[in-house]
Length: 273
Image (cartoon, rainbow, N blue to C red; front, side, top):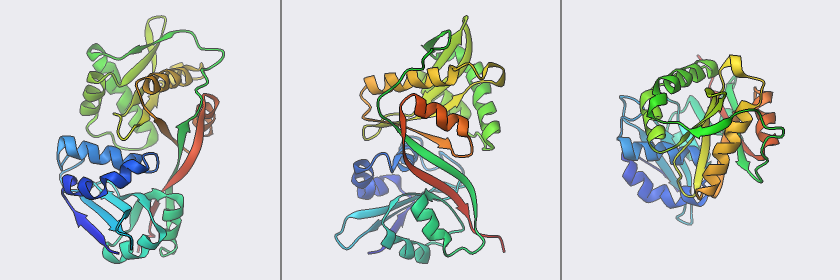
């Protein structure tokens, strides 16, 4: 009952892939990050090599996963409670992104820790289109929208206080795959939403953004509902999204169009010494 670590994503997925795929909602972040590493190589997120780990229980089954892609903090997937102690013994941790129960268990050993961010994972149940619908219509973003999309991606990153590396790659990849939807009103783009590639039957709605001058008119709800509908019709069994719990507006909007809470994730840091 030990943790095993590697910097090889294929070795990690050979060992932990079936466990991740069996619980795609709980492991959505690990699934998408490791898929990016698989497609883009070990330096997809930065110059340093990634660290990937898994834990096997007494029955030999994988019951814990970790992915660290510097400069980002370690991210935990589903982790059995009995795997937390061995993890902290094997790998010094001072900051981590984990589900609430795991984060709180880790934080118990970090007196004076701080919670840097709280996010809630939602799953689409029955889609409820906005009513009344805002004026305008959706369309799939194309290469000609690249300049606008890049500016909106950077603005989104600035608003949430997170760096936006590899924005060009994200925009190009999602545009090429049809994974970005715009809402237009009077022929003018006023809102956007993206969707991650389907993995283990799961997709995640990402980067929902409306410029400040177009807010308060229902565009974000409309474009999110549209891209959620197309994802489900394309075969996604799980349509997910994350919200910042500090933003009551977005949490309310997504629930109105049919998203239901699944679980919370915390980004926590040990106290500085």
